Amino acid sequence: MKEPRNTYRFGNDKRKIQEINMTFFQQVTGNQTLMSGVAGWVIAQVLKTLLDIALNRSFNPERIFGSGGMPSSHSSTMCALTTAAGMRYGGGSFEFAVCFIMSMVVMYDAIGVRQETGKQAKVLNRLLFDDFLKLDGVVLQEKLKEYVGHTPIQVAAGAILGVIIAVVMDPMFI
Image 1: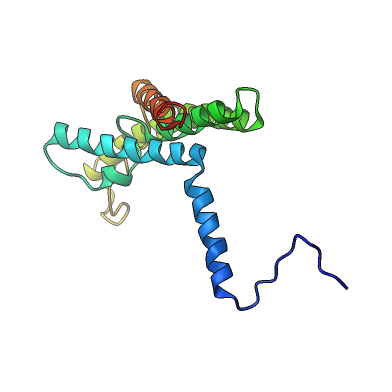
Image 2: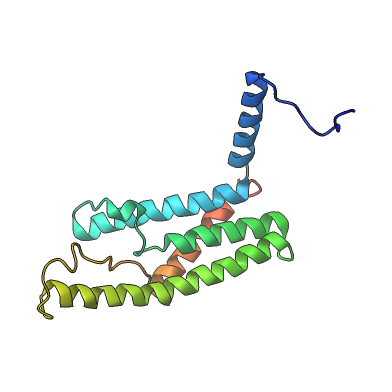
């Protein structure tokens, strides 16, 4: 019985496996839409960290990977991804539609639910650490994260940053 033409038997040929792995790596790094989203996240996180250093005169490692703050890396990532998908596949494409809806959900969540979570964490931290409720120290070992959401301005700044990143990274722009 013959094998179908589109199947490939790897056997023990390590060179072929390395070639396939390299091809996959090249495809991923050559994916302009994906790289725009990644750049959106990285650039927003770096800007957020630098802004935090400038305002507080100290380095907080949590700002590099943490959520919350200016600009919103969630918005930057999603808007870079959405803009790149729109430029590459068009506004009527499935790819753009999925990215656009996900962007709206992420930005709504950042402003609404996550910002409220941060406000509640501030209140709980105050109640528990000021020992207002006369609880023993076992209840809460460390403070709850207060910077988990975004203000509308932080989300808008992240969105604008993401669009700019995708446009600048587009090969037609360069």
